[in-house]
Amino acid sequence: MRVHHLNCATLRPPAMPDGLVCHVLLLETASGLVLVDSGLGLRDPAERARRFGPARFFVRPAYDPEESAFRQITRLGLDPQDVRHIVLTHFDADHTGGIADFPWAQIHLTAAESFAARHPQTLQEKGRYLPAQLEHNPLLVEHTPAQSESWRGFPGAKELTDIAPGIVLINLPGHSRGHAAVAVDAGERWVLHAGDSFYHHGQVDGAGKAPKALLAMERLIAYDWAKVRANHDRLTQLWAAAEPDLLLVNAHDPHLLDLARRGRAPS
Image (tube, rainbow, N blue to C red; front, top):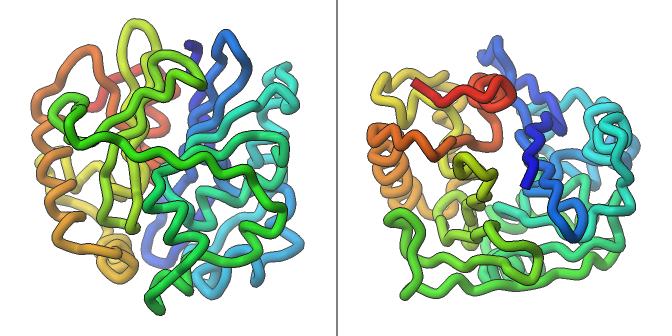
């Protein structure tokens, strides 16, 4: 598979001078195009309150339609109609805004995240899963990664062979109830998109440096903080292993997006 690393929304929270990105993977497979997450989409600038909610006042999206996956796919000389599948790490608005631009696509996610998005139970979930994200009746395809299967030490993995070989959905709950990571076989190496399992490379690279405002936001919106901390520990081990055939990225770190675009492994 050929993998493109896209920024599908620039976010400008306070006290974060470098801002945040919405790192989306665009995969060219033998059977069509696949997105891992979708960032914000073409509907979001005109429907900011309904589609993002009060969180928009903190993360302050740029709302640039040219950053949408739909427009970027077109600029790459590809056809957005060829996007057949979108694999989600989770259902937060900054990851799902673009799915409405591809109403024909199948939306793949864990069964736990699908249930949470459709039946939010806590006040926190009712604030994060907005009805507007489901108004176009997306075709949700639920997956339950088997605990008996693992991927590089992560228990609970499922290869999505119905989409294409080499796309693996990995249970990584904590940030949200059914949060997942997505591993993609890019040929010479794997790309592991960890979603919002961590926000900043300083949380896993041993430096321990990350903006305090970002860490506070992570703690505030975590569904299960103990699991988030456990995910940090496992991802820190993975980073320290520095496996040459693995590139670790996440959803919002502009530094990791830049390294991925330049084809460089984190150091």
